Each structure stands twice: as structure tokens, then as C-alpha cells.
Image 1 (tube, rainbow, N blue to C red):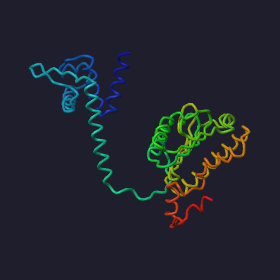
Image 2: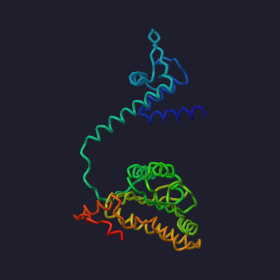
Image 3: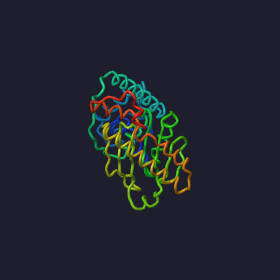
Image 4: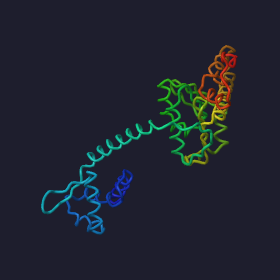
Amino acid sequence: MAKTHSAQAIQALSELGFNGLEAEIYVFLQRESPATGYRVAQAIGKPAANVYKAVDTLLAKGAVELEDGKTRQLRPVPYRELLQRLGRRYRDHLTAAATSLSELPGPQEDVRIYQLQTRDQVLSRCRAMLEAAERIAVLDVFPEPYAALRPDLQAAIDRGLEVVIRLYSPDDIAGAQVVLSPDHEEILERLPAQWLNVVVDGSEFLMAVLRSGSGELVQAVWTASPLLSYVRHSSLMSEVGFAAVRRDLEMGASLPEIEKTVEAHRFVSTTEVSGYTRLLDALGLSLPADSSELEE
């Protein structure tokens, strides 16, 4: 068990920027210290010259301390202190990077379609889309990716973003327009995968298919093409609106109630999302003086 914990600790430190030998030395000193560099080298079975060099690096990183005496004993800096310092340094680097990058000229309009490679990349891109969205996010999402994104959706709603979701398992997320697909049980049984569609502001669009259970990515694409994103926004809103009307009809809703449902999904052909303006710009067109004519 101790060996397992040591291996896990070494791996964790490696992911924080320590090389393998540095991590192994630090973990050894956590277990047995103080110790000389020579003793460390003997204990872990590594050449003394390599260990001394790694110790010098650990001293420079502030990860170990060296006794000021003849024996030159080493001891590790307490791990909580070390991790706090590494965390502060990392946050400082993030701030400096953000400042430097913000001063660079922005990228040109990119309308290409990109393949995403992993589930983590898909979820990270979805979260970034939700954080950057200004007006509305529309989702058609199966239970597993929805569970992963639910906290991010709630955070987006809490900051004022309009969120419209078609779900395939019952849930009531506060502040969102939620429609449970009328055929959700049949669809989940028929399709042995997890589907995810996200469009924000009619301006960015992501589509992904994940394997049920494992969450392994089958295929995913993302684009900021205003043509593809705005068209997908409109079609997805239509699909969500149709599902909502079907729900109302099955529940015996009155005509005024159905009309209210339709009005709630009026973003189908709106000029109120940035994707529409981007689309006109891309086509070399301009918005009509009275753009409300497009919504009548």
C-alpha cells in the first residue's frame, strides 16, 4: 500500500512540473528525513551524481531544505506549504499570460470546422462557450453529458444567460426553459450513445457523440462559422419548440397556453443574436433599418 501511495505521489508531483527523479527524492524525504544526498541515492537506487543534481534543482524550487552543517542533511519543505507556493506561482503565471495575450491582436474571423479529440476537450469547449455567451445558449443533450455540464449551465443562468434545453431524462434546472423530449425513453433505448448539441448566440456550434457508460468520444466537431451556427441555432430552436408544443398537446393544453409556448421559443428567426449580425457581415449584407420586419 505504501508503494502505491508513493507512486501516486510521484505521479502527482510530475504533473506539477517535477521530473521523475525530483519527485522520487521529495517523496522519499517525506517518508524518511532528514537524510544526506548520498543516503537518498542509495535508498532509491540512483547514481549519486544524478541525485545531487536533482537536489540542487529541488533547492532552487524551494521544495527541500539543506542543513547548514557538516552532515548536510536534507529535509522536505512541508507539502502544504509547497503546494500553496506552487499554486500562487501558477496563478501569477496565469495572470501574466492573460495580460500578455490580451494585448495581442485578435484572430481573424475563422469559419472552418474543427475536430475535437477527447471528451475533456469537448466539455472544456462547451464550458468556454457558455462562459463567453452573451444572450442565449440552446442545447439538445443526453443525460450523461448533461450531468457533467449542469453546474456550468446553472452558473450561466445565474449570470443572466437565457438557456433553452431539450433533455432526455427529467430534470428541473432553475431558470432554464427545459423541454423533456416526448420520445426520450424510446430514443435512449434506440441510440446506444450520448448526444450533445450546443449553440451559443447563434455564433458558435458544437456537436459531439459519446459512448454510453464509458463517455469515450466517438466524434465531435466545433465551428464558429456564422452560417452553420446560426442555421443550427434556428433549427435547434425549432426542434425544441416543436417538442414543447407536442408536450402541451399531450397534456391537453389550451390554445392560449400553446401560443405562450410558441412565444417562449421565438428565437427561431430572430435578429437578437450576434450570429445573425456576423452572418450578414460575412455575406456582405446589412441589417434592414426596421429589422422587426424579419420577425413578423
